[in-house]
Each structure stands twice: as C-alpha cells, then as structure tokens.
Image (cartoon, rainbow, N blue to C red):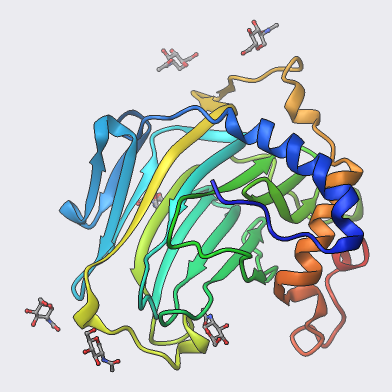
Length: 290
Ligand SMILES: *[C@@H]1O[C@H](CO)[C@@H](O)[C@H](O)[C@H]1NC(C)=O
Ligand SMILES: *[C@@H]1O[C@H](CO)[C@@H](O)[C@H](O)[C@H]1NC(C)=O
Ligand SMILES: *[C@@H]1O[C@H](CO)[C@@H](O)[C@H](O)[C@H]1NC(C)=O
Ligand SMILES: *[C@@H]1O[C@H](CO)[C@@H](O)[C@H](O)[C@H]1NC(C)=O
Ligand SMILES: *[C@@H]1O[C@H](CO)[C@@H](O)[C@H](O)[C@H]1NC(C)=O
Ligand SMILES: *[C@@H]1O[C@H](CO)[C@@H](O)[C@H](O)[C@H]1NC(C)=O
C-alpha cells in the first residue's frame, strides 16, 4: 500500500484522523480468489492466474491484449482491487477495470488507466454510463507512481451514490439524482471486467500522438487482492442482500468530502462538468449539484 499523498499545511489537521481511519479500513482487505471468481475471456495464455489464485496478470503484445470477467453478477457492491500498472514506456497501453451490465439498457462504472512514456504521468480515467448514456468523464493524475507497487482502486456502488477511490481517498462521487430525472444504475446487475489493450491510434497517450513502442512488448499488468466481501450478488433473479445490509445506506462524511476536494483540486485534469465547448446547450443538470 502506498503512503497517503503529502498534505498541505492547512489540511494537515483534518487529514491525520482521516488517514488513520482509512488505513484501518483498508488494511482489512481479504484476499479473494481469481481462480474461483473470474473467467479469462480473451487473449489465451496472455492472461495468467498465479500463486493459487491470488494474483492475475494480463499481457499485451503486438498481436493481442487480454481480459477477464467476474463469474458473479452484482447489483451494488463495494469492490476493491489492487493493481500494479505497466512500467517503463507504456505509451498507448490502456488498462481497464470496470463494472458493466450487458443488457438492453447499458450501465457502466469505469476505471481506466492510460499509459505514458517512461517518467510521464499515467491518466486515471473515470466514467459513469446510465441507460446507454455516458459523456461523464473525469480524469486525474495520481499522487504516486502506480507502476512500482500495488495500489487499491475501489468502487463503492450503493443505492445512494457511486464513489471511486484510490488507496482509500475518494476521487469522484456520482450521486443518485433520480429525483431530478437523471438515471441511476440500480436496476441491472453488472459483472466486473478487466483488460489490457492497445489504443495508440486515436486517443490513449497525449490524444494518440505518442505511439506504442512494440519492441518493449510484452506489456504486463498485475491484479491482486480482489475483495467483494461487501457486495450484493445477483443470482437467479434475487439478491444476496436485504434491508439489514448496512453499507447500502453508507453516507459520505465531512472528512471524506474534504479528502475528495483535495484530490479534485490538486489532481483532476479533466471534468466534463467544466467542458462548456462539449455541451453548448448547457452543462448536464448533475453538474450544478457538486
Ligand atoms: C510481433 O512481435 C514479434 C516478436 O517480437 C515479431 O517477431 C513480429 O514480427 C511482430 N509482428 C508484427 C506484425 O509486428
Ligand atoms: C453480452 O451478451 C451477448 C449476448 O447475450 C454476448 O454475445 C456477449 O458476448 C456479451 N458481452 C460480454 C462482454 O459479456
Ligand atoms: C503523458 O505525459 C504528458 C506530458 O507530461 C501529459 O501531457 C499527458 O497528460 C500524460 N498522460 C497521457 C495518458 O497522455
Ligand atoms: C523503442 O524501444 C527500443 C528498446 O527500448 C529503443 O531502442 C527504441 O529507440 C525505441 N523506439 C522509439 C521510437 O522510441
Ligand atoms: C432459479 O429459480 C428457479 C425458479 O425459482 C428454480 O427452479 C431454479 O432451480 C433456480 N436455479 C438455481 C441455480 O438456483
Ligand atoms: C439478510 O442477509 C443476511 C446476510 O446475508 C442474512 O444473514 C440474513 O439471514 C438475511 N435476512 C433475511 C430476513 O433474509
């Protein structure tokens, strides 16, 4: 686990208790089992499950990437996964980790990681798609090098909100604003998908300007400590959760909000809610709420 980002002086007082609280929370991660919980979907032997199911690696070469998906479907969950991203020159290499429904009305909660030249920063990409409509990207730099160690990337998805977090720091919140007519993903179960692929043609690194150097292939990303202990598993039309499942009501306290603001003020590099050019008819209605 990485150390928390360096606090600025005026947030120090707030951050110390938060850091203690979060480290307690995130040290209890229990190791999942990749053999049991996931199926390799493509890429053949480019995807490998190692160490009795504790680690999963995906690789990418000039002919293919690779990917896997969860055997279970979820309708709400608190999902933690640790990733160590491709090191060195990873320009054009895209790592994904997302939840997606594969239904008539498409819902998706996305984490993506866009590689870069050695020493240049990765971009963490997030999006929320509801009923087939996305266009809600937010992008971030990280406060650490994501290639030297494993770090925890979490998606909390409950009926009230979706929270994206990195090493316990919330980086983005998408609230349930159905009362304002904004669709929220709460009808369709989703699987977890992960993949490693190439996207140097159009967009990945500096908008596609920097190409993948295939002489450095194969590229490899590792996944560790999958944890879905707090999740509602959807099976045969019923959920494993019921009204006694307390985290389904989990709120967002002021310390978390402070932390979220700190990340957004210092590391957010793109926010659809600030992109007036993209939305000449006016920003999406949820943009007024944050
Ligand atoms: C792909 O990489 C392999 C091994 O480095 C090389 O032999 C082959 O020529 C490459 N193929 C293409 C289409 O670049
Ligand atoms: C989505 O469902 C269709 C048909 O049910 C299937 O052919 C396709 O492979 C599925 N896609 C994924 C990513 O699971
Ligand atoms: C790669 O590095 C360049 C230069 O620092 C930066 O502009 C860009 O945002 C970085 N990330 C990606 C994925 O292009
Ligand atoms: C690609 O990587 C090889 C091996 O590291 C290096 O020798 C070469 O200069 C790189 N090519 C480019 C275009 O950067
Ligand atoms: C799913 O539900 C149906 C109807 O209730 C039942 O007949 C079937 O055995 C169930 N399947 C499983 C795998 O539980
Ligand atoms: C609710 O879920 C918990 C945990 O899965 C379970 O132990 C309990 O029996 C369930 N209660 C009811 C009323 O179904």
